[in-house]
Length: 324
Image (cartoon, rainbow, N blue to C red; front, side, top):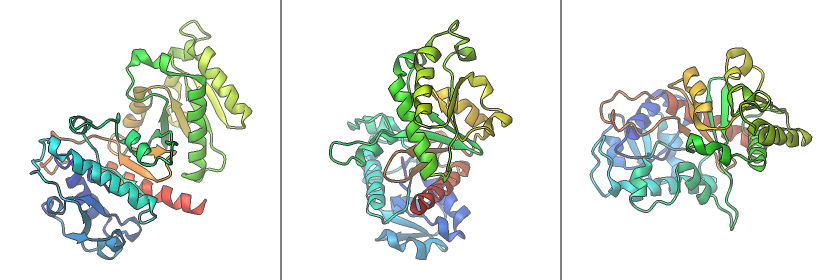
């Protein structure tokens, strides 16, 4: 588990996650971060030199692979001086997974503004992880999947202004999104015959072109191509019909076209327990579906539901990959 921004709620949540899971040996995790900071979280802490020591300590203390920060940490006060250490914690976690020493990486939240101030050149965690997983000239195409309870959504665009979304959509892009999702549902979730649905962009899915033509010009051709590849995908459907209980029972993942189209139903269904999963990486990566929480850092009130769910998801996915 990379600790994320040390001034956020990551340290508190890591300690709370250990308290919740300490009796579950199969979910043992090691924090990559500052040992002194973790020692101040009110739980027993065990510095380790090697990740392989995690299991022997986990039931009695939180294992920490110590990579200390060089500047003081004040809860709720982000500091650009922490950026190199935040990046180093992420890099270390990726290497541990790439070398088979860890089954999965769970990342606590970062503040991109802190990293940008020191020249960080990536839009966020996901893109940086893809670059770290580069093989020669080939960089994986990461896909963000969000899960909560029985709902999985993937996003065709993420932090794109709403007015720019139509121009950001393409047949090729949607086909690739669906292929990656289909493969992940099989490999990572153990679903032998994945069922996908695609949301429409416009109200009423364009209503035959009278409220927009994206469904006709982009979405339907992508679906047709995928169906010709024997991928079970249906749509485009009006987005307001896709997320009630009966609808969710009819598919394994929904392809959503913009951020709020997927995130509003997901967070309505389970605001506290959502998980962010990065598809198409050679390593398993999950994350809680929330930010750094600077406004509540250090107050002891952060809820650990999402991080615990992310740990459980990382465990399940890594086991499914090993069995595939």
